[in-house]
Image 1 (tube, rainbow, N blue to C red):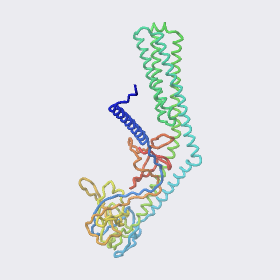
Image 2 (cartoon, rainbow, N blue to C red; image 1 turned 30 degrees about the vertical axis):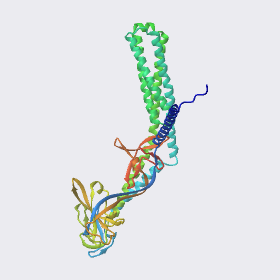
Image 3 (cartoon, one colour; image 1 turned 120 degrees about the vertical axis):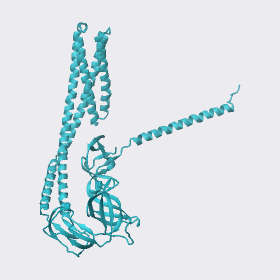
Image 4 (cartoon, rainbow, N blue to C red; image 1 turned 180 degrees about the vertical axis):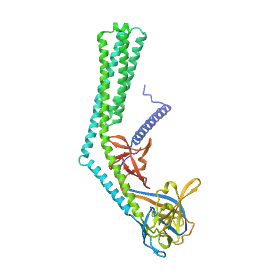
Length: 496
């Protein structure tokens, strides 16, 4: 007979099955590649280096243009007027000095603050001298060595649990033939030791996977300590059962009774070694932390001294009353030698602005503390798109204004320039620059977390993540935050 070929319907079924099989293989390959890609994508870690940069703070609000009114000017701080530089009817320019209070006491305070700053910086420089890196590296190396020793201790401790379990199993096979109450207790002891062995083994394996993961090693030390304590207590209970039972005290050989005592001693020795290495690690951490605390203390003192210097410098600057606008002096209500009290809201000098327009805005109470007279302002008018005009905060009304149960404060912004055709009532969007810090440590705001009332970041160090408490300062408009303490330039912070 000749070779028989499949009939056409059979060929069709064969080819259909083959196509389906190939399609399934292709789909499986696509899914596998996608899952691998997704896994790698999900494992991607975003790391940002701590760098120096500038922080610009601004408060944004909307208001309305209105016709310019007289501006009552007063000093921000109390004091005795030393000099008045203008007379009624004088034309004045923006930034022109108008009057000054006595600054003798302020200058003394500023000198003392600068001396405190210099002393704090010297203290820090003494601590962080040429030996700084050596001391720090030695402390870090000691801690690393102690954690390596902890792994050795853990490695030696686990076999004690394993060998003890093996002894108890052999004891049961040798001496227990009937399930009386004592026998059940000894079997229960075996089960308890077995549970501790099953808990200790995976913990030890996990600790050995990454020797730089110090928190994990700490956890394993606690686990091993707990297991050893439980095993020791179980052996103590087993010894008591044997000594109190007439059957076991006579039937258990002296050799096995001695072995039981030996295993109990071994477990106790292992437990003591765990406790000792925990104490040693704690001492190493304290040594490292003590040094860092000293650094943090001096850095905090420097920040405090810098703040005092900045405060007195600002007060010295504010001791001279300057014109916020171009205009005409219409009234002078104080004389040299008189005291000024800002809280009494008494005007010292009144000016009629030459520019007949200003912007009135209501600033939310949370933001008003950032705004100061003299702050530069960028003004955008809806009627003049794609143009920005310069302005300046010329007054802040100390009386609150409640709008829909929310507290606001009225702020007046004077134009330094304005477009032709401007009208009262026009809508104005303002950006008040309330702060500027140059060359400070910064990180993106989204790296900062709040945890148990603390401000923290995740720092990448020695291949693992370290939770670090930080103190932040100013927050900029570009989502950068100033780092006052807790991080150093060049350290790497992980995005949560």
